[in-house]
Image: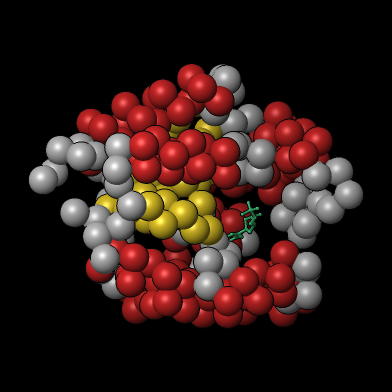
Length: 212
Ligand code: TMP
C-alpha cells in the first residue's frame, strides 16, 4: 500500500540527505519509491521554483508568492504525487504544506484562512501520512547551508536571523499541534543517528513491508 511521507525543517537541517537515506532504506526492502521535492517536482513546478528562489516574485508580496506555491503544488500533486501513490509507490517529498505554513503564514504573515482554504482546495485528501520535521538551531543550519553552497544564497537563505528564528519556532509549533502526523527529530547529530531515528519512526507508524 502506498504511503506519503514529507520532510520539513529550516535551512541546512539535512532534509535532502535524510530523504535520500530513507528512500534507499525503503528500496532495499523492495518498496517502490518516488522521491520528489517542493517547490518543484514537475516541469511546471520547477519553473515556479526558479521564479521564487531567484527573488523575482518577492516584490509581488507574500500572498502572490503563496498563490504561486499552490499553483506549483497543484501541478506537482496532479502530475507526480497522485499518479505515484495510485501505482502503490511510497512518495517521499522534501518540503510540502508545512513549509508554506512556516515560511508564508508564520514568518510572512499571510492569513491562516487563505492558507487553510488553499490546502482544502489543492491538497484535498492527498494529506501526508507522516511528516518528519528536522529540528536544528537556525544559526547552525544556516552555517551548514552556506558551507554547502557559498556562492548562491537564495532569497530565503539570505534573509535575516529573526526570519530563520521564526521558521524554527513555526516548525516546532506545527509538530506540537499535530502529533498524529508529525515527528520532531533532533537534527544536530550524525546523519546515521538521525537516519536511525527516522527509520524507527517510519517502522513504528507505517510498517514498511508489513502491510501486505
Ligand atoms: P530548499 O528546498 O532547497 O530548502 O529550498 C526551498 C526554499 O523555498 C526554502 O527556503 C523554503 C522555501 N519554501 C517556502 O517558502 N514555501 C514553501 O511552501 C516551500 C515548499 C518552500
